[in-house]
Image (cartoon, rainbow, N blue to C red):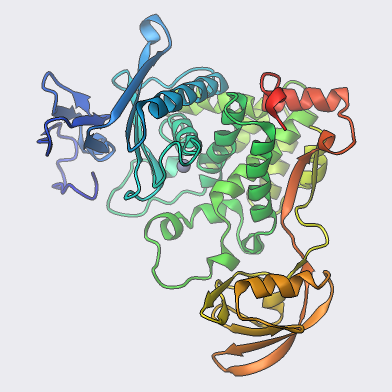
Length: 482
Ligand SMILES: [Zn+2]
């Protein structure tokens, strides 16, 4: 809507009537706009609501169900524009329903949708661009793959965006108020608004029984690797990363940037802070978890839509734990500065082991691309990686590693496979300033992996088992974790 409509300044408060003329008679409308008696005519109370109301006109599959009872009954609609079968839509609707129920359980209640209806507008077609965007009573979720093709993996974005119905749409950062369409609206709290949403999106899918523990741990391992190894944390805290949103999620530059060295996305970064806080709360405070923190924030700031500040988030953590020093320390260490807790002992409480994903594997850092037989470094090299320390960077051609001529990206893997971490190899290169040979000291692949203790020969203790069940809610689906 903001890309489609113009508005006259000063008239933002006026109600709007809008009617559509679909290009085909079998098209329907999926939207959070307020329905009228006519099928294709809608209203919006003001400009803000109109701008916030994406609308799809197409011949989509529609699935509907209700949540709540009596006075609090509301309708959830899932409009899916796709090339799949009606059975795919049925399967996906069932999965969505379970995730929605789990999230209502997490927050203690559903948000009160403005007109009693929430609409998922899903487009799973090869010609769309993949995204997810939250709105007050709806979301647009899109993916280039069909549901069956992606094995219904689109559920992760659906899960993320529905959490936003609480966290962001109603539980809102103060800096975003009132929302100004004419400029960027930066806030320091995206580590919470996006990050904690990203923490709960896969967790509520797991708790709903729509994912198994190992699948969940795979996502966790990927995010943890990215955040722990994120060089940008040297430079910016989660609060400062949050302020990068206008440059990384909206008006991104088409010019090359150095985000690989200066930025860690507040989505996974915040998610891993959520993980740390959840595990610390469960370990230190009997019967208290991050779920309690989210429910308290919802009751204090979300339900009545009182925008929160950074300070509010800290004070509420102190209230939930009854421990002001803990809340102060957690914020000072992990949110106001870029340190990370030691995840090994935190995960061990749940009988999970954190270790290298590829132990003993020699690693040079960076990624490579081939143009015919010419192999180049494909992306900015990152501080503390072997390539960076050797002074090599994006665009440099790599001609030889050790005793191997490099004519394909596979040759890089072959050359590295003959070495151990710590070995020093000669690398022949061609850069903008000429060619040369440089000594590169290989490291161990820093990628991390979280595994179940019992996947090896060890047994879970009663305490670890209980901790894991309370956290992951896996009693019901433990059987298919393997
Ligand atoms: Zn989000």
